[in-house]
Image (tube, rainbow, N blue to C red; front, side):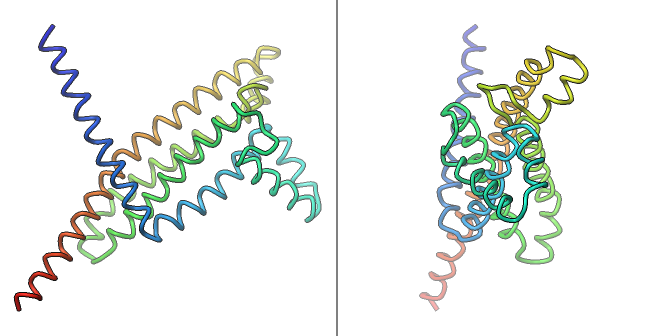
Length: 221
């Protein structure tokens, strides 16, 4: 029992250390324009899309049949909903968390990608890792979009399909699946952030060490 307890404590300690490093990597990355630009663009675009989809396909159907002014109004409302305007607090909070995490992940992916593209040799070595990072971000985004909906009213992109298959019980089932997909999206995003945040931290610290070492060599010369 003691051995098992120690094993769990070691695992928790390692996980806590990984998250400390990942958090440090995220904080340090915010000082670089590559991260900030990718984060802001992702937050605006992905956040607006999530709010457009939160009301099932009705908003999209209305968007396609509206004129230019109508389209701009719908997009504007979806963007403002990202900050809680016209949204139930629980619905807004869940969407905001998903969008925030996804934007951080995309920002880190872009930051790490740009840092790795320094030389042909490093680029070849990093290709597989970069592709895996993009794949993880895409999976998380896909799960978030599929699970997009309103927790309190039960609307989701899956509702029409599931209602057709399961009749009256479809809406409740769609709401449950939507929640499960959203949880899965959050877990995948957190896992990816932990790993890529650690990579970002290692790159930033290594880069700073190399610059400091180079300055010392110049002083001695």
